[in-house]
Image 1 (spheres, rainbow, N blue to C red):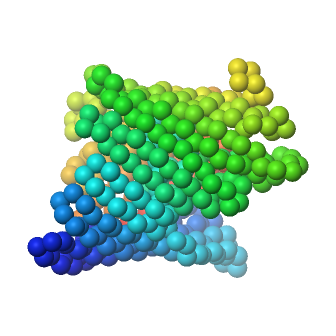
Image 2: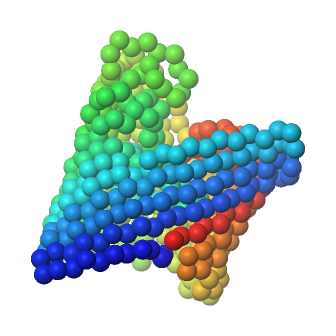
Image 3: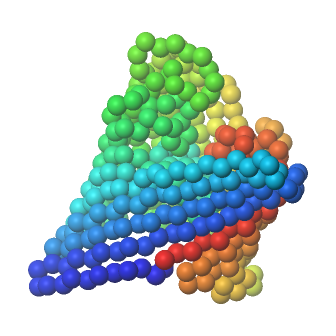
Length: 373
């Protein structure tokens, strides 16, 4: 990626300024109505500055915007447009040789799974998205790395009232969230335990439930995940979430994913990733309730130095629906071209995208061009 860099060096410290950006445009055509077109444009300018005081200590600052616009062309006389400019990232960080503290609007994500992620707590990364964009959270994140490759994370969040990750009950406005994660080497892999606490406002929910609460409700999340390389890559990721109120219809939520990956020595190398996911919400910890089950398979094959072909399949065992995505990608130094074909149910119910009006609903094709500067 090209960038503009200015170096100022002296005997005591160095300073680096960097200005870069990502520009992307796309068009989606749905087979149900080839004259109904969706257009989109993203521009993310990013400015960063880093000052090093020695080989072990540095301070850096990063700010970026998300400038985007969309247009839905339904006929010559009916075009719907929208656009906005949002703050995408804004954080400052202090770094030492084995410690870092980052404060501000940032991305926080972790876990072992990649396609079906129970630990998608603070982001909404979509493995099908060529841009890999996700909203950030406001907070302080501190990480310490031990000499044996173990590490510990501690965070505190504030001002994140919008839904993030899996949340369907929104966080109470102007409340503090906090948690942590401890990751430790186990054999030829690693395991981690994660915890998070927040106060929810059940009156503000995305499930359509009509609930009347006089006060906020505490919520606690617990997770255990691990990943190993034993001829094939193997991992698991499990979470348990509890809202401490009998008035919440299903105060217990449980989710688990198991997965694998392997690269076959066929041609240029065929990489496969497979995951199986189960989610259940219930009134009791060990009781049954509402559930969903998904399987996912990702395949990636490099055709040449410039070209690659990838495919992602999801299967919804409850509704007996198959979701399929095929992406041909050509990559130059600063330019990336994606041609994506999709074949999905008209009502898009894949677990991490609850909105029905998804641009990948039904059958169609999308062309996306990405330019990095």
